[in-house]
Length: 148
Image 1 (cartoon, rainbow, N blue to C red):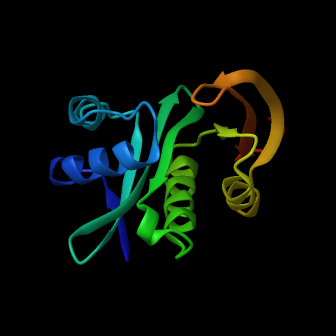
Image 2 (cartoon, rainbow, N blue to C red):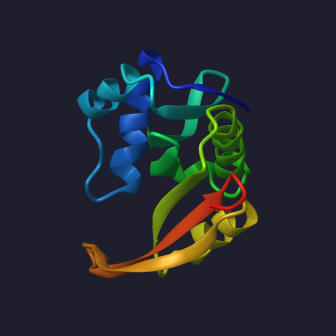
């Protein structure tokens, strides 16, 4: 598998993964808008021209906010998400971001373990953040600079 920046050719496959993974998936149009924003970091995991998953991060000043981490169901537990998070971290460090943060369902133990292994720590809880079903989100942050 290779990890590369998201491009136009990936959008349909990413949107398909979104539809399988999320109750409120991003559309191709919404994903396309991210292509034009130089402040964002979006990467895809690809094997033999097949998109396995992607990670998206919007940046504001020196802060990174992960919008989604999604892997096709038949490609999970193969290191795709870990590779995507590692690539995102490399680019976040190059951009001198202070931290990267995300929300994760409190019940999503596999994702919480993944993020913990990638250096994220729980810094808070957002009550009733998710719907379908209603559930709290854990706010997890990976600090990239000291004294943050």
